[in-house]
Image 1: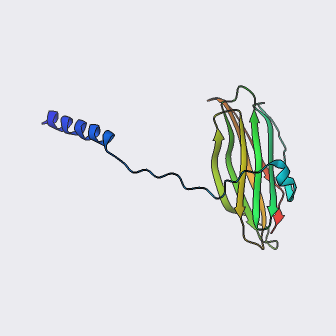
Image 2: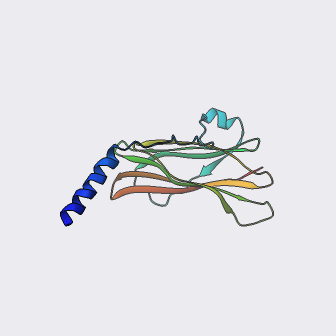
Image 3: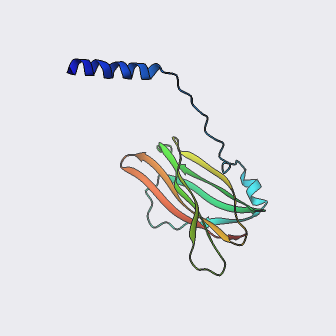
Length: 162
């Protein structure tokens, strides 16, 4: 009996490998827009301020900027690692907002695991936002050389009022 069950499961597995399947292309993410630093600088923009207590030296360059273009919040940045870095980017990029009269920021949109399998990653997002709020972005730059050798740098931009 075990032999028949094993044979039956093997046949199902074999046929499932060759069965036709319909696949769909991933939808175009409206947030993914590509623009240059010069385009960002044409608009009202705010850069992040970096404070580092200790650094392992894997991240050699980094940037995070937000800009305002009508009701669009443009997010631009990069993470650059040493030549030994195998994975580079952002572990998390969070758009936060609040009313001018409030003191607490709330998360509005989150992007997770934005990486490239190289020593450089460029971030470029465009997000339509609601007017009447202040917006800022927090992010964590990330570089990985090996399982035991990583570096993270957290940063927060200033805010823009829409």
